[in-house]
Image (cartoon, rainbow, N blue to C red):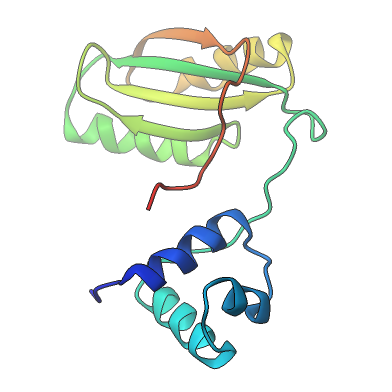
Length: 153
């Protein structure tokens, strides 16, 4: 893995907030020539510092207004149950994030659905049907105080 310097960090900070910025504008904002900027961004992509670009959508406008977090407790904590649960989570489109955690439960899921009726269907048809699920606890988000995918670098 390559070492990154402050100029690389500045490039990454700008790109996290403005992934569609032109190379020329990025170069100007980071005090680089356009060719040096392009070379650095290419090097950051090739070394997996930049792993992709995406549009950020408004959840309400695309019918996914309800944000929920779910704690999941498995009936057994064995490798085969972990693998089966993880595969099921990856294939469930309503699940945005799924994290194996240490503590009082096994997984923390972040999901977005249309509304409470859609969540009820998701709970019964998807979540409790996933391999190894013994228990779930749901937390419905009342207000998103902060939402950012940008890493502090």
